[in-house]
Amino acid sequence: MKGSGLLLTLLSAITISSFANAQDCDRACLSTRLDTYLKGVVSHKPAEAGLFIGFRQTENSVVIPEGQGMWASATALGSVQRRYFDPVKNTAAYFGTISESGKEAVVAVRLKVERGEVTEAEWMVSRQTDPGLTGESGKTPFNVKTLADTLPLERKVPQKDRLSREALIAITNSYFDGITSKNDYIVKGHPGCSRYENGFPTFGTPLKGEGHLGFEGKTDCRTQGDFGVAIVALRNYFLVDEQAQVVMVNAVFRRDPGNPKRRNHFTELFHIDGGKIRSVHAAFYYPAPELPVPNWPPYDGIFPLPAQYQ
Image 1: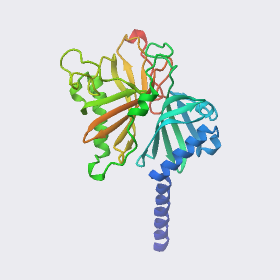
Image 2: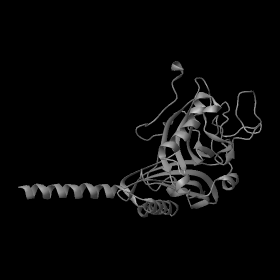
Image 3: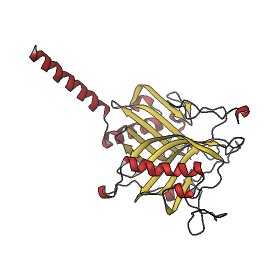
Image 4: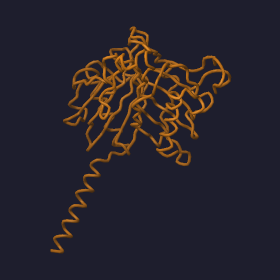
């Protein structure tokens, strides 16, 4: 009996260990899965993208069947390509551009890998013709050339200069707390830190009023203008690339009550050096009022409050 009990214990340990190993995907594994997936997308071949049978994909919060959306429109990877990996969360990400028959869209892609297969893909896609804050077509901030000129290259930060995952997330979170609190001093950023939305610079304008940090009399990533934002909601820190000292996060700008501007759903990419934010790059869109965002559990959808509750 003792021998049988020992055998069962060993078998259980082996099974648990095998299951754990099946769940893990290191940087090399994540890189392979991301490249295979992106190749499948631009070649219009979902069957060759390494997808799980229950694979789910959204593009700007809309669930897209395999073969539609980017599976049909993407023709090549774009002129701007950056890749990031988080083995702790089995997550890979692509930030840059995708070519659609010669026209480039700014994109951020979150990829979940489990048991060696891609189970989830979440796309933020911005095109120059997209609606702006008020819903008017062609009014979204957009500049691929500036994105190419300013997006930091992929990097491997020396071990001695790396901060922990928890520290990187806390520094990033200070940026959103600064926006929600309308207090520049909360944001842990370098003086002169930059901020781009779909490649369009949203800093460097002359400071107005008093009480702002700014940099040499101009705004920077620490200086928050009046976005009409009530709260930065649903903050999902889905990727921390400790090697690159990069954090990627999804969130939603929810507007002040009565503000007619559209919500802003986005993925932002933070490069952090020496305990402070160096640059922020966003890929985002302005969802229509009836669209639930982000449309991923546990936040299946956040709509604007009905007028009678505002």
